[in-house]
Image 1 (spheres, rainbow, N blue to C red):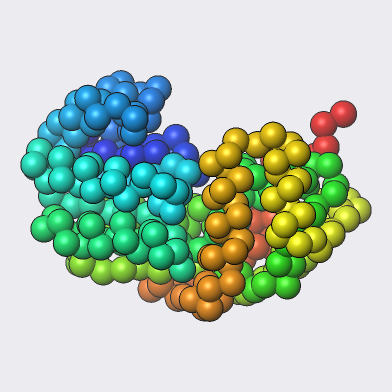
Image 2 (image 1 turned 180 degrees about the vertical axis):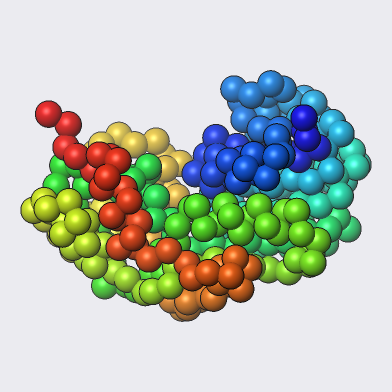
Length: 276
């Protein structure tokens, strides 16, 4: 068993896919999650030491986002411990256009440990595994900033890039920006899903204030409301987020997945079929 590779967030969107890519290469990584053995819990530093024992390479993600309060301090503490325990390389999943995420990147860059930063745009899977799924199921999608162009990227593309740079040291010291191959709006996305699923999805362009009020009415956790408001107000309208990168093609030798192809694949799974 090749447990000298640790995948933090190994049950999450990119981590679970990264684990599969590594397994396909005959590598059985150690999964960093609260339900794993040994378990990893960001809120319990005792679990960090056990998870990092004999680990040489680590994929580092922070839930729910590097932008949330406390993330920087946690990344700093874990990186210091990882270095002390002999970790030789860290691949950090970062967010494109996030000032707080870039502060976390600097911690890794200045750690003295070999690293690669994978800086990602918003995920396609936000529409199939995360916060935009429920509105798609109800057929009523209300979002602010409807016309902002975003290069949505597929989580499997991210994971495949992560698997490559984790194992290939020629990417040491590099920042790899992963985006989709096109700029699309929320309106475009809802229209695409509507066409692919042959469902009549209604889209409403609302203000950020209305969106935040709606989340509070749904009694979503305060940290989730804060994060969503931050992402819409500080990240989506950052000009950096409206740039398409070709790093996926450079690393993998193929083009990044389009949203249409993603939507066609997800439709076949039945995830977007309303529950009866």
